[in-house]
Image (cartoon, rainbow, N blue to C red; front, side):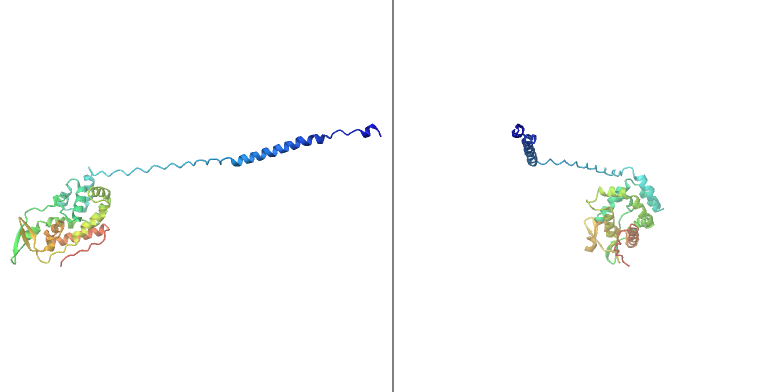
Length: 265
């Protein structure tokens, strides 16, 4: 046997590389496992805060309606409702929008509109007479209101409805100064018209009696009426009918519910 045949073979290079490669593989596996283990134990990332959309600013309130200095505008619109000279005199009063709102509120509550409608006050004094032994209102006391009834009858109801809508912002503002919260001008006006049109026209002159220095109605039902209704009664039957007919016509022109009208024959 030759020496070359019995000599041990040199170690294979693959054998020398096997351990380092194995160690490297183990380290890699351990490192990878540690990475995933550590990664799964980390807290989840914090959510990205959402940015709220800014709330748009509220629109500014509409400018308040100014009532001062509006009489010229109101007169210009109202003068076309009637050519009666007394109506023109009525329009010469000041603060017309507030006068209208105040009178409507008072009548709706059954109270006297004497103060805001002072320009409509009749001339002369109240007189009584005797009829069949009873004290009643004298006819000349009724005729004191002929001018008021004439002016009211002369109003153009259709034009009045149009002017009412044009003046609505002013009248609403004046009404809001006086009315309870939540009650509209339309509701107040409808209530006022209804209160007057439901007054029955007496078939005979109502009897009066004295109470202190005043005359009152002997009929308790008439005496229980509000001051606004009593003003209408003092106008006399003929004038009452004229006023009630025009009020009913005006209510229809304003698109308000029909009023139950109780009129005598």
